[in-house]
Length: 417
Ligand code: ADP
Ligand code: ASP
Ligand code: MG
Image (tube, rainbow, N blue to C red; front, side, top):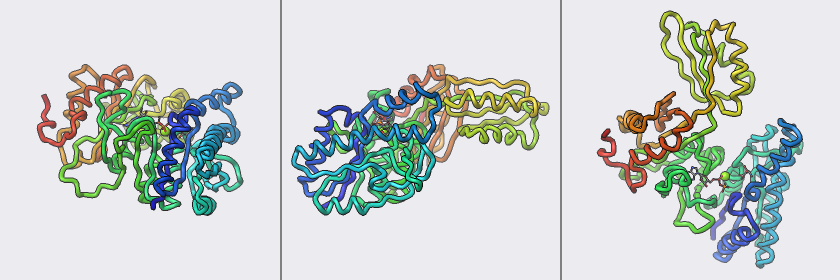
């Protein structure tokens, strides 16, 4: 019989009725003779509610105390689920991250899991219990409660599955798997039966929040079979697995990810000389601001423009930092735009096909959407556009690449109309 780690997200445990439904799904696995470890999120909306309480006191609450507060959301759910299982006749035990122990580094708000002590869980499984673990949280070496960043319960589940060498980690959510794009934005989006770790990593890092990126990193590193499926009736969901080279044909594009959390800053008229990029970006890094895309053109007449993007929440701070060095680097002006969005095409099939970028740009042009920035890697192409065109852009690319169809393999799909 197998050992499964099941993860249930916020919507799946959003009410007592839903918790009862989740307990039934767990019960079915137990009745089938399987051992079950469960990771759960806070009830939907709870983490945001707690954040709101903290921010009503302090716009930038002390990170240690914020983690103590946010971790309570998941503690409520584990207890309610364990109680429900018990009332249904299934022995169950709930544990916080600290009780397991899920050891993390001490970076509050985005802690990394360093180790999972699986002994207590194994002992419970041997006694026939379902083990219910709080997602999203851990404890550092000094016994401080830490949290793993938004969406972090996915990572808890995969880390448990890796530590326990589980047969599969099943992430139950409110959609039936990973789709060609967010099915809430594009109803024609199609479920992918299988997606590679590499593609899922790109999709997660480019905005598809269906899995937290660190959970995919973990699953890939430790070879954890990972499946995303729906709590509310599944057709098999999506398997995230290594590229096995067995596929006869690889889809050109697996999916479209998008991200609204971007802002761009342009430094106009900077001197075109060695060291200029570092004089702009070093102070930005020193202010703990992560930079995403960077574009610099070849200079003319000794000067050039330099543009980069940051997370929208860092926009104000980044503008101040760059404005402060403007004089020193001899730049004319700093301008910014925090109403931009990034749309990305992802697919391992891109490696062996030319013409995808031009087809993407043509599809956006037909809709009158201006591209502000472009970046590419081997398996993705991203375009930054005005935020107001995000939905139109995603929909038009989805249909231009025929992603609603079962296969976008054929060479005709590359023709530019
Ligand atoms: P949970 O609370 O279960 O962790 P999340 O809200 O974090 O659920 O993630 C599931 C959501 O991810 C879906 O409801 C969907 O709107 C969104 N999503 C974004 N991109 C995709 C995609 N490519 N495939 C499936 N879902 C996606
Ligand atoms: N409750 C946390 C959040 O809302 C963690 C999670 O749901 O995965 O981000
Ligand atoms: Mg999530």
